Image 1 (cartoon, one colour):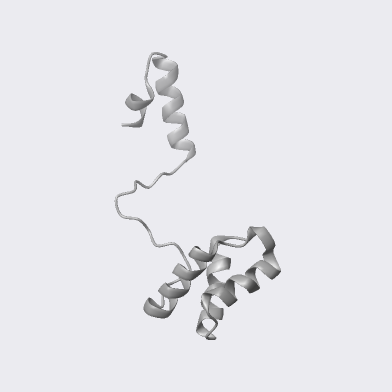
Image 2 (cartoon, rainbow, N blue to C red):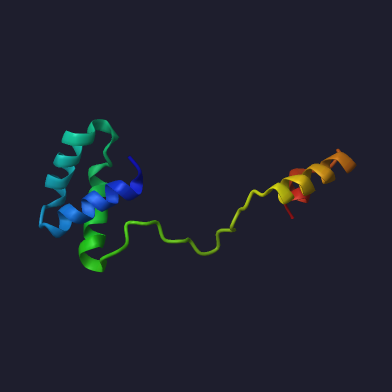
Length: 93
């Protein structure tokens, strides 16, 4: 199960008024060891009740957007084939 799916369940149960301990118990009963930790359940439940946050991850500022395309792959292959002494830092710039 994905983080988003766990968050949706936690958000729903929080809105129903269940305490984080009860939510954790229900998650453990259904998902066993794959369920999130109590501290994670507690934090998400707090955020959902206080802020009404989305279950999706918010984009982080400052992180570069990485895109793998055929064009990018072809450019890097060409650079490597033309100069096999290139270092990773030189290619990534």
